[in-house]
Image (cartoon, rainbow, N blue to C red):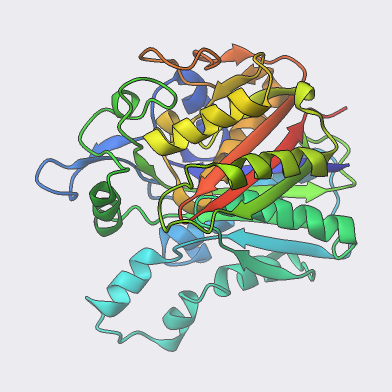
Length: 379
């Protein structure tokens, strides 16, 4: 049994998993109105300054190291001891955006070699492996918004195959720069001009899309976990091969991904109790996941999405959403946001007492990346 036995988080709520949990149960979004994103500013859930300057010159490097360090320390407190081969998976789509922007603009590509190496995607991984003396495989995973789920599935494959004894998984995305946010607005999926709870209403009438957010989230996974938050039972990925942004309206691959994930986990549809949905509040994604629930899952399945609260953290999206489920499992609460309009009849309304059962976590990455992982309470 593969357990998630350590969690570390840096998010728009602050540095640490407790600020994340406090923010989720408060029902208040992490996003704030930020200057510098146009004449009126924008609602964005930025990671605040912080961390250890010795971890690197950027928020990205410091957040990645802080989240990983918190997860490893947490796992140790819960009884985990690293094996001989600890692997590292870093889920990332756009890394070190701030440093690369400065490199090509204000620094005119003139930086010391040491700073240039700091921008390489291998560097934060190398420094973390060196800090802890880990010697298992280390690599980046990238599947757009599905990157966190992709890393979980990869971690399980490594553990099942005996390639590693344990895995440290980190998903980092601190790319909510004015330029990037502006282009998501132009795509018609991001909303910056309204309160997040009003703009992002997954599975509810009047939803306009999502608020853009940032996060770095780390987990320790082991099949020797004595006190896990959750057990990872299985998962699956597929690709629509349809369009660079849109979901194939036939939903063949989306539905098939759910079916494959449940088969991989050895779980029947009747055992599923919750869907922690991708739920970005866009019409096509919400329609797709609602259709899956109605075609495949039981009417007793409760649906929720935490994107109105944490925002859409891009490459770290599914990881922070899995962390929300894991913390909720430990604390007996599903951290669903309150509804603000009429919506799907199975949509949870606010924090809800947790009952036993399986949680399915879906993530539909831009470009056709479908992913589903299956999570169970420990025991």
